[in-house]
Every structure is written in structure tokens, then in C-alpha cells.
Image (cartoon, rainbow, N blue to C red):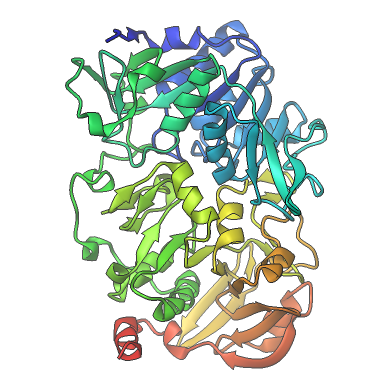
Length: 527
């Protein structure tokens, strides 16, 4: 067996050449190769090199504080960025808005699958995901600013079906984070919250003739790792960097190591505190009512923000263990977490590669998804990806919403200093939000209402004061909250008029500060 070369992070940074295509592994605040990317940043700041890099990665990487992808956010260092998610890299966003780099936002799942196609030297990735959305080059092709002229994505037709085609691009440098490596370069990820893209990313770079560098916590004797746990075999690896600085090898940014996120231990679900009753919890409760009609085999995906609360509500109501929650980072089962640890799950049953998880999603494997609602228009389109100069990015949103049977968008009705009070089983708006979310036309199509109607998806838009349903003829208003005035609090706050046939009150128990009794309801329904 070969002895892998052991180097420092600073030596790893010296391997990157001007004009290289660089890819990194990680998910929000977890699994970040911080020692490698921060060393690369330090080299650029000291020497002005390497410059004109292309950065490509699938998932969100960072925490809006200079870590993760923001280590590349220096004028001259980057020429181009192709990312699945942008919200956590505010400094990179600034370069985009100033037209100082070329920039693309493309579906996270497709980019994670793209690594496999690069590794296999296929012509590229062919997918239906992204049709009729901003990723479609007939709309914007994922381009984010004026200096980005070229289409990274093309439309092709196969057997009478339009598909999006991502041509293969070789990759020069891969920075990956693992837990332990042996002397032969075999890497396990036993303390990571997911394997993420580690395997296909390493294959893609290696088979492109590039250099694979893996940051680990510790190097052990060759052959002492469990071969069944090896996610990156030594034949893909060129260099290993052992990192002693704990701040650069945290399981998740600024968090203590949690063995319940890796399968080492399990914790009682009841130890997770219930969320307080407020407008956001009302939305999650209304979404959780859909779980009553789901079988015990239902497989669910929840987005970040308010949708995360659906899992909390399900556990509070005693039905969480009868449902299987999944997250795009790869965890199946357990309780998904949010914030800097979004992508991790407590008590997961399995951890899949990210690309494999998206294969399941793309094929319609999910029964239900609950995702965020930032902007909605008369056609039922949703925008969660770009708002003027704020570039959030789509993440896995496009893959998940285009291919799931039941899609629920969750969000407050307006935003911007919105204040609401829940009292005596009613909702009262004490200060209306300054920003309307229901607009005549969204600024960026992250979800296409027309595509959903064509594929007969069941789509709901749930807010704290109103519920809408997409039907063949458009968006229907179906429910309003008790205590809410239909005209003043709903219709006057919208940029379009929904179709109104039969409007009912949202169930009163959603607004009562006690358990709703979903477990008993579900048992009664199953008799």
C-alpha cells in the first residue's frame, strides 16, 4: 500500500494554481475543511495568489461570518463561482452584486449528482430538474449578474422531452473534510453529521487529473480503520492534513461535538423542548395536520426555518416516531436540526451520500415536503432564491419541490416588523409587516406553478392567517384564521386576487396553547 503524503494546511494551499477549478465539501456549518480554505485565503491575502479561481460546490457552506465559502471572497481570487446555495456567503454575494465575479446559482441536488458524472467522464449531467425555473436557460440559466454571459446549462430534447444538460468540467483541486485517515490515505467520516459529497467529489477531482487533499482530526496506522466505514479510499487521495486546532475541525461551527448526530448514541426525543405558541408554530401546526392523512411509511423532507418546526410539532404531538423525516445532506429518520446545524439529524437511522439522497428525491420518493414561502405570485410561482441584491440561492428547493407528490410552502403572510398576538383562540395582527409576500409576479422562479399543474402535484401555501391551494385554474383561498378580517388582513395585503369559492376558518385548536391531540386523531382515523 502507498504511504500518503502528510502535509500542513499551508503546504496544501501552495498546491492551488492560478485559474484552477476548486471544489470543497461541507454543509452549512458542518463538515467544513476550514483549515484548508482559511490557509488558502491567507496565502492569497499575503501574496495575491492564487487568482482567477473557479469555485464549485453543491450545498451551503458557511455562516455569514467569513467562514466556509467566504474564504474565497476577495477581488481577484475568484473568477467564477457555481454554487447551489448562497445565503451563508454574504461576502461572495457582494462580489456578485458589484459584478466582480461571474456567478451561477444552480440546483443543489443536480450539482451533487454532477460530481458523479464528472468522475465517470460522462458528457455531463442530464436532468428534468429546473425546467421552467430560473435554472432553465430560457429564463436565466442560473446567471446572477450582468458579467455572467455564458450559459452553463443547455436545453436538449431527448425522445420528445426537454431536458437540462450540464456539460462536464474538469476539476483541479478538491478540499475535503474527514474525521480519521490512515497512513494509506483511507478516510472515515465517523464524527461528521453526513458523508455529504466526499466520495463523488474525490472521484471527480482524481479522475480529472487533479489533486485531492483531505483534512482530518487524526492520522492512524495503516489498515486499522474499519474498511466498511471508509468513504474516501486512499487511491483517490493525494495528501492528508492533520488539524490540531479544534476551532478548525468542529463538527459544526461553534458547537460541541454531539454523538447523537453521528449514530454513536441516541437521546430521548422528549428531551427536545417544544416550541412556544406563536404565529410560526401555528403555521407548522397547520402543516402538521397533513400528517394525519399520511401512512406510517410516509417519507418527508423539511426545509430550514418555519418548516423545521413541523418536526418539533410532530414529536410534541407524539406522532414523530411514526414518520420518517429526511434531509438533503443525507440523513434518513430521526429529528432534523436547524440553524448552523441544518443538515444534521438527531437519532438518524441511516446516512446516505448527498447525491444518492437527491436521486431518491428526484424520482418522487418523498410523500410530503414542507419548505419556505418568501414570495408567491398569481400563478403559484415561489421565489426563495433571489431578492434584488440579496442572493439566497435555491439549495435543494428545486429538486425537492418539482418531484414531490404533496408540496407545502410555509411562511408568515407578510414580513418586516410584523407583530401578531394569539389570544383566546384567535389571531390578532397588532402591526402589519412592511413587505408583502404575495405579489403580482415573483422576481425569481424557484418553483414553477405551471410545471406543478402540468404534473398534477398537490400544492398548499400555508400562512398564519390564510391557507391557499393550487388548483387547475389557479391559486384558491381556502381558509382564514379566526380573528382575522378577510378584506383588511388578507386581500388588501396581496398583490393579486386569489380565486375565492368557499373560505373556511382554520381549526381553532391551532391557536390554543396546548397539544392538538394529533396522535388520538390519527388513531381514530386508522380504526
